[in-house]
Image (tube, rainbow, N blue to C red; front, side):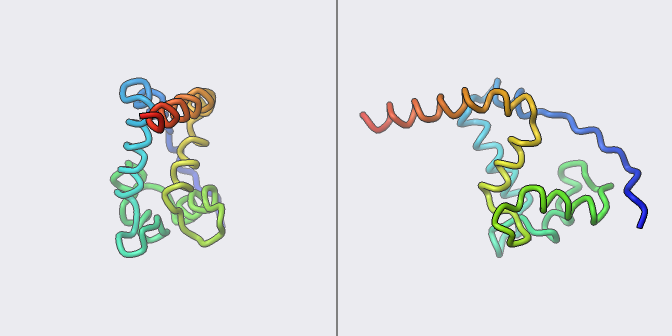
Length: 119
């Protein structure tokens, strides 16, 4: 089987979203993205739901093998699908700039949590 020759240019918009919306806004947008791609009955991103909704992300030209690779890349529990946490972790991993900032984001989120618990 020949390797896919499609070259998809990945534009990393997550750092821009984080800059404009902050850490909580970014997480909210990732959750919205998850809901957009998930199988509503299963509450997971499955191969079928990813294939069906890939055009919403401009990924309609990806082969089935490419889509399966995306799922495998983020599937930590080995169930063949992505839950919301796996999806968010995968999105962070695919964003090199955001990975560099993730320590700051985690610190910011923990600080907010501590401040909210004292109210």
